[in-house]
Image (cartoon, rainbow, N blue to C red; front, side, top):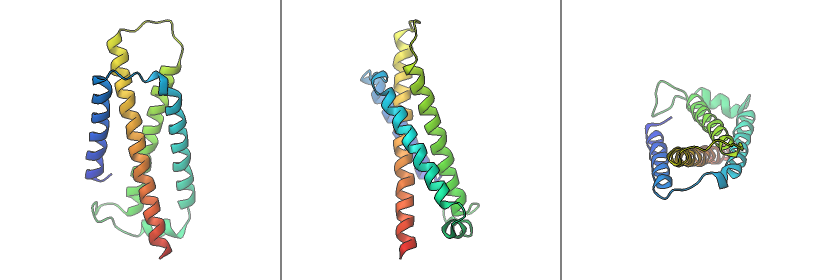
Length: 146
């Protein structure tokens, strides 16, 4: 990933986590929605990768060195974004499932507050990465049509 996107992603996650902690947001009410969002995002990623496999556009990306990361091709950079986004989706699904599992265990309120805050941070990372990848794909589509 590009440094600017890593920085933006970190700021997004930290700001969302801090706000969720300060305002005591509970993640339980949106846990099901988060699983749905992560599942849809994962479907978009799989569809995008499937469309790229074997295409002329992927061959062009593979043959072009990235300007910001000269050690990688454009296809390699895109693969990094997909890897990061897929990992983020899996993390969101796991954390959401933890909030959906019925339990008789009573956790200290601080654990729930921290867990909810971190879950909101992971949720925001998914939205950010989905936006980045869709932005790239739409721009790429525009360039390949010209």
